[in-house]
Amino acid sequence: MDIAFRLACIAIGLPFIWLGYEAVAAPGARVAMAAKLRIPRPEIAVRFNGAAMVAGGIGVATGLLWQAAAVGLVISLIPTTLAGHAFWADTDPQVRKTNRIQFLKNLGLMGGLLAVALAPYVNG
Image (tube, rainbow, N blue to C red; front, side, top):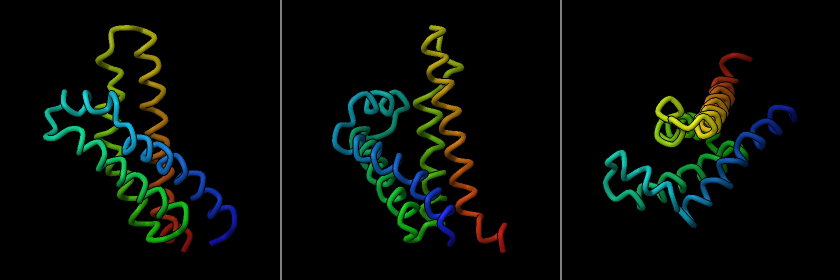
């Protein structure tokens, strides 16, 4: 892998390591969001998802099983994004705007992760 690709993988992996750690260490409001979606044992689910994000972020950033890690992170981002940033359901304009930004940011991360996962097939 060339240096630019490796730096891109590090940049994509680091937010998952940091934010996943935060979810494990202090799940906070994420638990209420998971409970609202009727996820069983929401605190454990939030912490497990955070741990999976840390593992995936490490995989992408270090190159260890990086393609599988990237796909796993995309899969974990789908429910996280839909549950945590459902801007279409917000009535407060500022909250809606903030959630729309976060939704689009997550969509961009998913695109970057898919580019990482598919890079060997696209670039030969």
